Image (cartoon, rainbow over all chains, first blue to last red; front, side, top):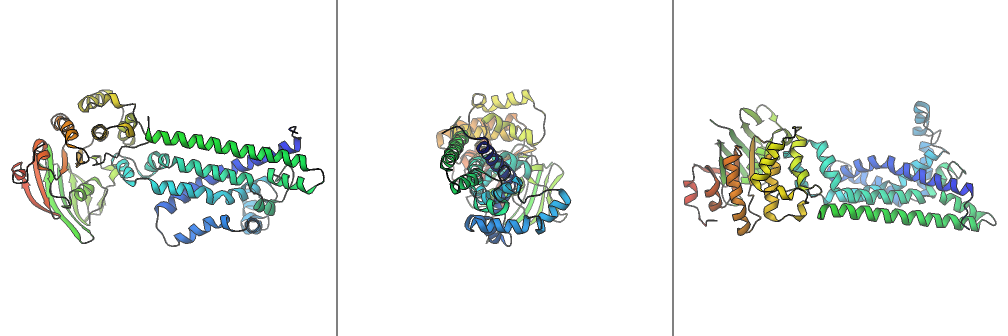
Length: 231
Length: 229
């Protein structure tokens, strides 16, 4: 039962690659967005907040379709990126990473924003009197104090990216070896006669990865928490 | 000779501050009842709050001048600040807290100076601890050390004993007296407690309702209700 076929290994490796890249690329944007929403007041802030959360409430197929018409080869953004930078998203694993990153983005931003909002700003004032400019206050005080929220956001985004199905399959289809992630592969196996065993194996792999991510994040969060309250 | 010259105006809601005073070497007490605007004035000196109008000059260096549109940001003023609640960084060890200002100001490490201040405040045995594991008195001593180690031109202390009980106050005051006699940094010491100031202050600025009510020596503390520490 547990002899995974080469195709299944490829789907697992591809899923991990897509989820890791999606999370890492989304991370700096997520931190910047979280800081902006936590600390700045500007016109249209609630509109931006709503826009960030849109992928959470829209049907994933709708997000995938919007990506297809904007980031596809003939889309406004996709065409520009392909012509000027040679970056192509449609029917590539990079497109899957884009879809996963956007679907995971609200889950990444929310815990980081809450963590930044919870920080005692008087500590940042103290850092300023000690000679730290705004960037260094952010790097040495704000970001380290927001670490538990950062970890939570990364894990949620990674988990979402790993399991994302609707937007990915709509945007970049289900191509083995290029865009066929674990989820897409399980779906494919359930559609063909005799695919139950293969689907079952991948289901167990998906459960194992998700559990491992949860355990690791719990451990990291506890370590970060201990740093604030103990020796 | 005047080291610090303050002449500021600031309106906050329906409370307004208009304060003008100079301070010299030693410890200048900024004295007055709660709500007199003491912390607000000190925050303007530190650069954490912008005055509406006026000037703040430290050692011939203009920190703020509304007429000339000068407003040096807090991180470039080199003014140490000891807050009422310490405000140590909870994610850093005591050693890293002490070293923070030196690193941010880009000063070279000075082991002799560090040893001197650790001894002055008796905090050498705390270096490996986290702020969460310190007593109130230890926390305030580390906060004083952290401000001193950035080699400030001026040290601001805003009610540094207010969060402590009487026993802890008695424990810390001798350190502050040593600091006054040995550290050679001019200080502005905010308090509403005459007994505390009588031990530490060399001159007194009395603030009331956002205005300077009197400037002078310790005799200004005499008529205040004088429960000694």
